Image (cartoon, rainbow, N blue to C red; front, side, top):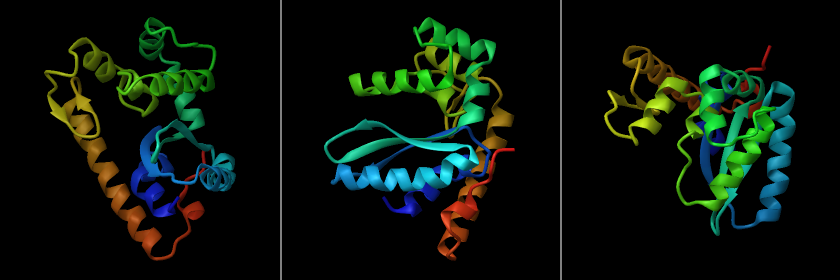
Length: 184
């Protein structure tokens, strides 16, 4: 898997601005892909990140990069726990929630609406998205915004600037491991 895909799709997570990112990568050879994924995780895990395959298709793999500690915090808020509990997620730890999310993704062609919680979206926007069936948002950027449009616009702008800076640094031969901001 080309590292540039990871930088392009996950720079806000690599920089510590976002809990997680989802993206697809081509995967003709699953065995090679698994070896590459192990090598990438050797760089990520010591810095508090993880890259997991959530769903395999014939030609692509849906991948999830996330900050382990941030996901634990995000899923432990009262509103997130309420959303996940209503959908019968195992609330005992974030890893089990990721396993459950992966199961749901493999069973359906649709994305479960609670997926936004795993990506660092505000729980109030995730809740409103579910309640309004994806309609009536104030603004759409990285996610559909229902509650705090001004804050979301600032966040989307930070993500965009981060992605540009990370891609530029990577293209100037900065290694992917040097682009990852470690958890403190």
